[in-house]
Length: 243
Image (cartoon, rainbow, N blue to C red; front, side, top):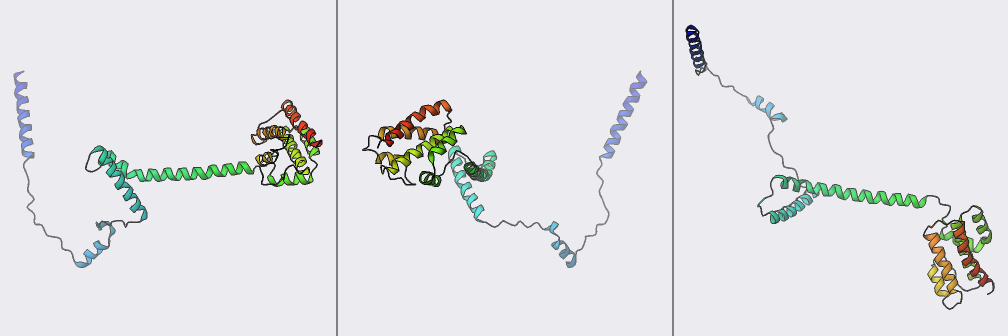
């Protein structure tokens, strides 16, 4: 046991000795010859972009002027709020990217506006058998057999369109009796004003209210509701026949 301890001590001592000998600083005493460059070599390096360390400042344009102006306003605002001399850390990063975020938001809103407008325009341009334009109103009132148009609409169970034709029939009868001056650009309120002194004003007002509700309100009606509305139009038509 004693011999083992002595042997271990010797091995440990030799290890320390060799470690100390390895840490001795060695100096390179060889002759050093300086490298010489001629002008040709220097020109080669000058033409190499990898050795070009000149910092080129980007020229200001209208966008950089706007972003710098906006950035300065925001910087002053946040400095006033937080009481710091210069924006630092996350705040500085936020202020740098904020103009671009606002630009993206602006473009999104513009694109969304035009897309929505186009979709609405496409929806309006779709063919709808229930839609009757103002130019068709004049043609129907002056040239068509509206009674037959009402019958055709009822055969197709298109009760909204039948209400439309019934109202045009009333306008036709009023115009033929010179009770209103029918014109394409006039509104239903204009015709009610022209009938203000007539005893038909109340009945015409009810018919107009039904027509506006069913047609312009795009309210779908069934046969039962149509028959109830038809009573108003037939009563007004009968009153006009007696005039």
